[in-house]
Amino acid sequence: MNAIYAAFFAFVAGAFTGCAASIVYRLAIVRLAKTAFIQYVRPVFGRPSTLPPVERSDVGRLIHRVLKDQEDRCERYSAARLPRLGQKAPACYEMIGRCIGLLDAFSSCAWKCSGGDHILERLVIRANNSARGALRLGLMGFYDESLTLARSVGEIANLLSLFSERRELFDRWKTLDERTRRREFSPVKVREALEQVGTPIRVSTSAYGELSSRAVHVNPDTSPQTFDAQGRPKGASYYQEAGLMVCLNELAQALTFVTYASAQLSHLETDYKRRLFKAGRDLIINTGRIGIENIQERWAELEKKRAEVEAAAQ
Image 1 (cartoon, rainbow, N blue to C red):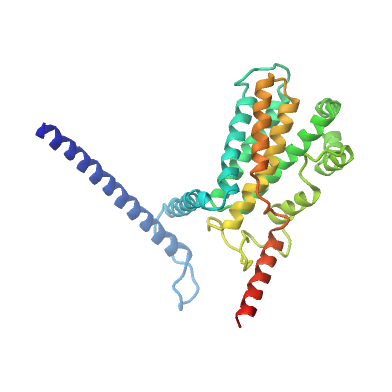
Image 2 (image 1 turned 45 degrees about the vertical axis):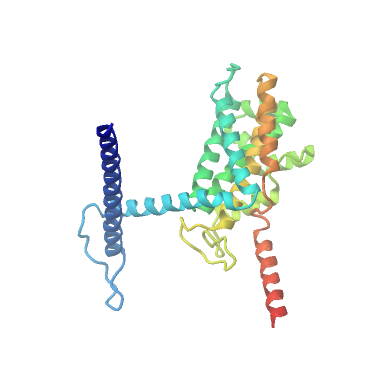
């Protein structure tokens, strides 16, 4: 028995030593990469502004290593912070995962292959892939880029929502040539058609416009990754609580519409449709109010409250 205990403790000690050595080695590699990164891109302060010579042939690879480490740390921190962001944010994250899983099963014919042209399934796959990318980018602190993909999900959500209300338009959309299809089913035309139908299941014109101006198109007021009260532009992979919540909520809204419309347009059995509808309902119930349209208003409200508190304290 003593021999067994001794062998067990020796195994644990060996595993711990190996793990510790692995961590030390990883930290050393990251430190080496950071040193090479700094030496390559930054001159010494107080001296003539000249770039140093390239001393390593793999400096680009080391820069990638540093940036990946920064992205991984931001993603881990975001995941750790989620349970502390109230009730809706962690629930929203959970429900996004459920919808992504169900849409993946539907679009890959895991439940049932309905035959036909599979155009609906391909559209759902496109939306689901964008949703997965948006979620990962949001966790890694690429908030603008996450919103760009959320806008893509929103475009497909609008299109599918229109088709679910007017099935004949889906058939027409399939048969048109590319030029005519772009003209008749552009994002603007689709939103106008949804407004005429009167369905509430759509990504609004104002939300689409904000997503386009903030995360897609550039202008003199472009300010990357600006999701704090100070309005300071930043590089990616710096955790910002408001940025993460906006990305979750915008993605959740668009993904809800994709889930509902997919269930309506599909030829699935009733039980599977109900599961999709329930997942979409649970997602929208747990979607928060802060979004791309009102984040500046929220900051203004907080600043006003802060000024009132300071004035009362004087």
